[in-house]
Image (cartoon, rainbow, N blue to C red; front, side, top):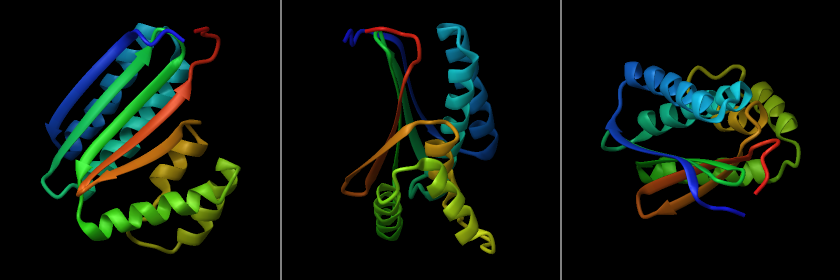
Length: 160
């Protein structure tokens, strides 16, 4: 597989709601132009919004880092990083453990919607939405108080 990046984007920013909305649109438009693929751009827009919003909401210092790459073969990767409090790290670890118990992303998404329908805050649907609607695989890495969530997808019709 050719790992030469055809797209490489890295941003580090202090987030706010306006920036999150603008960033998702920018990333989607950038990738749609670079890849000439509206479907991938749409999936990336959902993924960017959900992951950046979560990172911004739970960041202990308000800083979020985004890294986007598409290699010369066929792998799209979006990594979002932030610093988080211990209770948030534990909640994320539990959420990922719960997701791994499901083979079908849509089944997990629907079960989570039912379970959280009455909640007023923090439904946890963002990660499930990325997995089910955008078709992105998700991975979690924790390094001290830093959280890295990586979303990946194979690009259809592209050969390595």
